[in-house]
Length: 172
Image (tube, rainbow, N blue to C red; front, top):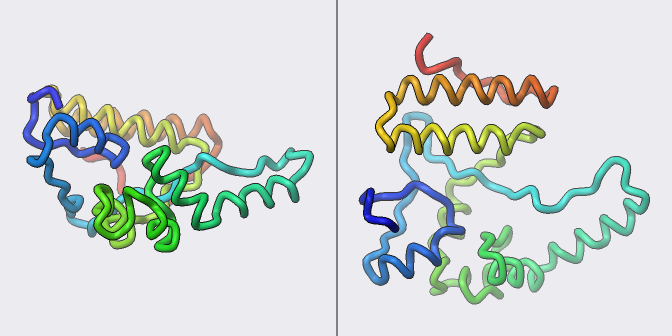
């Protein structure tokens, strides 16, 4: 948006700003395949039921309500979140067939993989973001990714969770 780069690798929540900046020149591309298949992080963690919830049945009823197609469409249009179902997308202004954000729904349907179920996820996500930002700003890619790996390992240790098996650091 500032003219520093020809491409931005980001999420659909930035689409309104990019549409405003680029107008009809905006092009939404499929994500790259870095050698292990094309993947988009799928799912959001906005809603959950705590293990200490005093009214789990009521909380579950509320979540069922939110998962109705009309509510999915409302969240999609109001918050820019990609609908989790075709029925919700069909009722959405932005994500229905022909809608200005439909490309994101189609890409999600084709390439989404659930994010890791870890309380460390936000730290994992931020570490990846900052590594890419540092690389874009000129830092050595191996150093940036090694630093991100260290930060992720520490976040996982701090959270007391274990992620899915992954390869080690970039440099071994």
